[in-house]
Every structure is written in C-alpha cells, then in structure tokens.
Image (cartoon, rainbow, N blue to C red; front, side, top):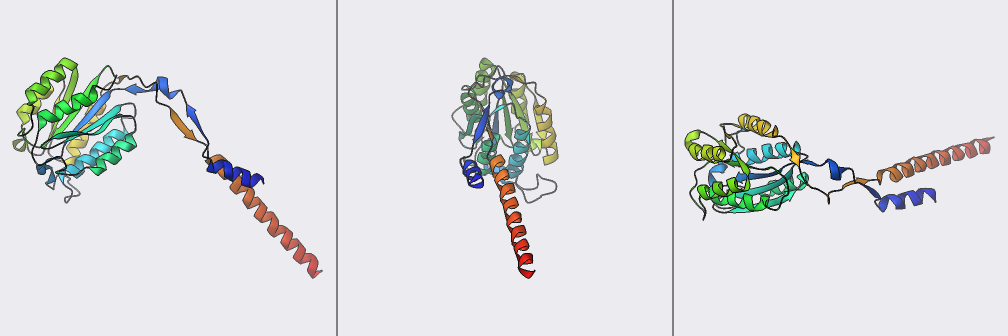
Length: 258
C-alpha cells in the first residue's frame, strides 16, 4: 500500500514554486533580428562544417548566445522581403530555441527589408519594461525591400532609447557595411563584421558583456518538480520487497530440503 501510494503521488506530479526568482531576475529586453533572405543559403561560412549554410550556422550560434543570457527577456524577429516576430519577449529560452529551429532560409521572402525588420523589433520591444533595450541585427545583404527605410527605423530607435548592434556576415562587399555602421553609431551601439563562424561567435561573446538592468518579472515563478522523490522511494521499497520475497522463498526451499 505504501508503494502504491508513493507511485500515485509521483503520477500526480507534485511541485513547488520558488518565489525568490521574482526579485532576482535581472537583465534587459533584447531582440535578435535575423536575416533569412535568399543570400543566407550560401554555404562555406562554417570553417569545419562546410555544407552548412549561413542561416543554419547563425541559428546555432544564436542559440548558444541565448543559453548564456539567462537574465534577459528575449525576442526574435526574422526578416527577408518582410519581417515578422518569431518569438515575443520571453524568459523561456528553450521555447525561443525551438522557434529558431522552426525557421529557415526564405521563410520571409528572398529580399532584405532591414527597415521593416528594425521597426518590427522596436514594436516587439515596446511590450517590455526593462530600462535598457537592445536590438542585435544580423544580415549579409543590402536593404532592398519593405515599406520603411532604415533611416526611419533609426529615428524611432533613438526616440525610444534603443541601441542597435549590427553584425554583417560574409565579405564586406556583400553587405552594406556603411549602413550598418551608421545604424549602430547613431543609436550609441557598435557595428561588427564576421567573415566566418568563429568570428561571429566572438562577436556574440562581446555583446554578452553588456551590463544588465532591472526587469520587472512579478509574474515569473520558478517551478520545481518533486515527482522524482516519491518515485525513487517507491522504487527502493519495491526493490527491498522483491529481495525479501526471494529471501523467504530461498529459506522455504532450504527447509523443504531438510
């Protein structure tokens, strides 16, 4: 009966909330803006895995970057001919990584709408409450599509106090380096270039060093699952019962032989 009760308790999935995480959650609102246009299908960006295209490599490095931003409220915007919010601001980094895996080259069209991408990111960040908000824009092309210009987006970013860090990947001749430097400079951020995957990883490491600011997260609670404990105790008791039954059976057999 004890074993049965413990197994039933484990199946009920008991848990406890840890309210201490409410006051300790710190970081910033950060939007990753990823270029998924046709040019991101080029391979050779990764020095070891040559068959991986630029977008696949960028996704892998973005996921590694997110794993180390535990205190940030993260959003993801994917763009090509148009831009869309792949993930709203969230602390659920596993969910963000899953959504990143769901995207692919060309999912938003073949062209490059940098202006629309930045405005979409600003709209997504407007729902956050952090004192400091940051956009990380990654692209390998020139602005050639969309309804909004990068100049309009920069003006809105400056008005909202949002820094825009820009990353150009591939050779500088392949993307508008001057535009990316202007976007970053006018918003008080920095512009980077990465000709291969290792260089992009180092760029993410530098961005990682941004100082955190307080984020309100009153509704965030850490859930601690307790099902393991009754299940483990039930397993131990079951093992003990089996061993005791075998011992009794062995004892009876010896008595029968005598």
